[in-house]
Image (cartoon, rainbow, N blue to C red; front, side, top):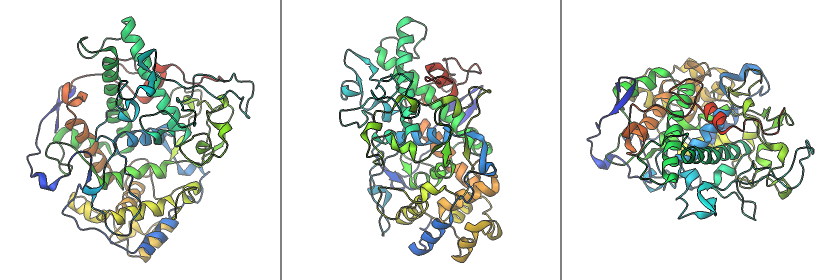
Length: 486
């Protein structure tokens, strides 16, 4: 576990437990293997999922003013770095140990780096494989502002088929994540440039190649962002501090970490409730509907107009509207973390029924045999939400109808807990503890992470506050906050 050590942390192993209780690496597993599955009817879950609707998606009352909308998509980017489950919805309970995780259970940016320039050279520049390949925008002008120059270096690299050349194709599923992936490609390239000209000192000795030096520095700054920027914004700081100071109590493994289904299928799906119906995307598209974020990517399957791909230049993102970078530019807020999803997520295109993301999440929890939220709360020695608290709101009426005020699906419980305990600004106790334990555990278990190798390390790249580093700092370091101008 981690314990305070001056201004940093030191690693200590406290997981001397039988391997049979835990999952091998490359697999999913259970965080609470002794808790019984919660198995309500599919009909009751479908009715509850259909009631989880944001009835006023344009109302500022539903905004989470403490979390800029960029963190919604940073959360998705992080998810693509650590989990990839290809199994379909099933009617019977699936053994998580039989489900392959096609990502490493590490915060190592394998979704960006892939297997490296030797194994996947098409991700890198042919003449200089230390650098990532960067794509250009469409040769045709955009329909919003045709005066913006075309073929600018502001899209992900693409094959002739228009599919992105990426370590993880899911990062081309929506435009914000695609542009974020591009920012990480450029972040790496900028670090390579700094190491070569001597303005950036590598973490390790210079016997490593420039590529490996840059990769290490990029990953450590990314891990810092996850632990010290992303997590503190969305979870209860008391739970994070408890895990950092006193260690993990519930996420345990023998040698290699795994991804608990309680995390991947329930707690970490908090981001679905944070999604807005529309966004102030850039100066051209100040009220872009969520559907448009899928119309300019090849992987989403929601665009039949290949003229949109590569993206037109007027769809280059303005990061100042997504993270707190410039006080003079209004930032999009995420929606509150609560049991409500916007309309677009109720009728997902190009997926087999059910088309409601809420219903799909609830059925996924059923198929993987997740325990109820109340049973997890009791196991963690937290006081569960009361029946009256569960019963609040239109969703609560349906929850009470099916006796979910007594035992609730874990994903729904975690969102309801965020609404009640966190006032929609952050997760409550159960959700926060699951996220804190898993993320800290992944960093502790990774022998190459900054937590394991140098727990007193501080970011060395420039940040607004010396000795720390945020996602906004990363974007400012790349230096392309608003390429199309005001």
